[in-house]
Image (cartoon, rainbow, N blue to C red):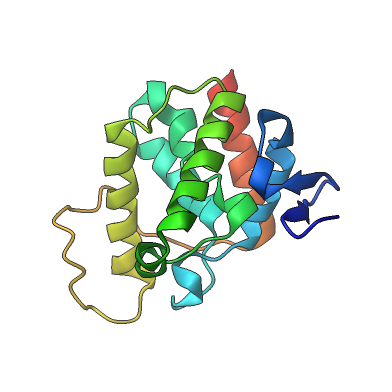
Length: 171
């Protein structure tokens, strides 16, 4: 195994320097996202990227629900890096875009991410800030949340929610 290769939950070896459609597996995505906390752990309680993704998928237009569910799927392979850190690492942003674009191809999604998914993501972010971030500091995001109370679930429930939502969308 070389320095840019990782092993996924299902045992697949993935070379991040040569990430391909064949590397993309939904069980790896659902498992990893359920185990990764949003906000680099700086929330009142653990809150998974998987649960966030489910919420976003329910908030965007129905034709973009799969995009909403998978909008952060690159984090299953790269981890959830904070936006301030991404700003400091432009090469990371390039890798993140490549991995996310490859995941989009694997699920036959058009690129780039639709605007309504980006808006749903911001609305979800503001609901999460309202309910699970300990301080009321202004983040400079001028958008209202469009969700009910955010109630963080454990990783097992978040994983099940993600997989169930995928099945629902694919019907």
